[in-house]
Length: 269
Ligand SMILES: Nc1ncnc2c1ncn2[C@@H]1O[C@H](COP(=O)(O)OP(=O)(O)O)[C@@H](O)[C@H]1O
Ligand SMILES: [Mg+2]
Image (cartoon, rainbow, N blue to C red):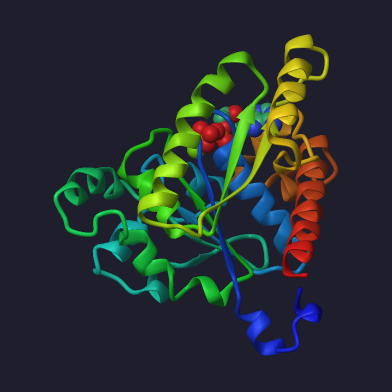
């Protein structure tokens, strides 16, 4: 990316923020944020994870201390960024964790002016300092997810390969359109990522074909298989790339990282 830009310094300070969104729970948003982030940082990219789900799964997945101030304290103005960013076991991978206080933020924000822009406001100065800022969002289309979409340059939609996955997708796409029309015209549908793929089922293959037929190149070529290592790693507080470095899950997220980098190069040309 840097090589393509005549202003080397400028290129290094142009980060991109990606929100992981899908109002369905259990589709692989958090798993993808953690492990794609880890795989990109293995390749030398600096990645800031932002846990914007009060459940705090992303924070746990990379072993962050959830008793410390996190993203809630940052948006509430109680703490500065430098005090809420934590390192992880992976070099170049850092996180702003979510603690229980974020649970109440949904309600507190509802009556505030500019309630859609809280996250954007605090992340805007941070994004240029990283290659990637990944925002994980909760399984709903509420105010927290809205804030994530307003703060993001791109949105990645993890999709489980099952029939009902497509029903939720229509609603999600409508919301993305709404955000583009009202709050964040630059928001780009980055892509659909298939997760938990089981090649043995006919349905999984049918769903993949149908979505590719509709979204074409917006579907990531890399498909994340169902792999038990991916579900084990979070309880150890480390990414799968460290937990079992050569398992199918780790390999698939490394492949996705390569695809993300390739896409990035194409987009700057
Ligand atoms: N490819 C996969 N193979 C096996 N288990 C997975 C895979 N991706 C995610 N999981 C597990 O499925 C559950 C839901 O994934 P998660 O990333 O937390 O979804 P979301 O953030 O969308 O709710 C978690 O227990 C996670 O460890
Ligand atoms: Mg999650």
